[in-house]
Length: 107
Image 1 (tube, helix red, strand yellow):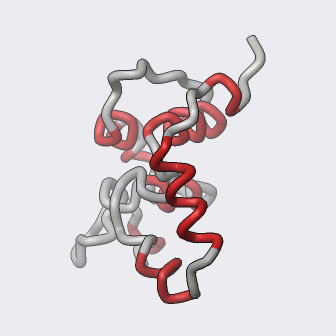
Image 2 (cartoon, rainbow, N blue to C red; image 1 turned 90 degrees about the vertical axis):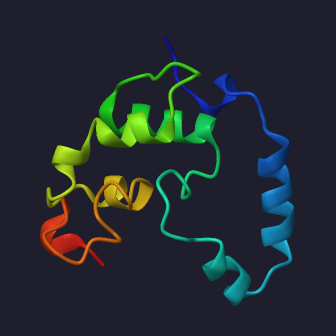
Image 3 (cartoon, helix red, strand yellow; image 1 turned 135 degrees about the vertical axis):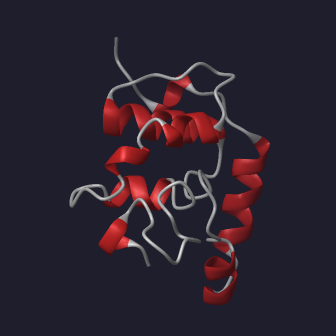
């Protein structure tokens, strides 16, 4: 079984996003990076692929962002969990001011 992004159908929203970002300024790019689980991956299919690359677990097409992120919440405070904290910031505590799951690494 060979994994690649070619396995996932392209989404119109992805092409629209890339087109908008290709002509955007720095502020537009920063505004697009809100604190939301899965937002860094942009699409569910890309998030499924990223989760597979990080944790070698495929998720079904109907899996939600919350399901995918919650499975790894216990790893948020790991030193090498930077990608997880970037992909699942809400799950890892980006909005929590007191003892979030990501501990010291919360921004």
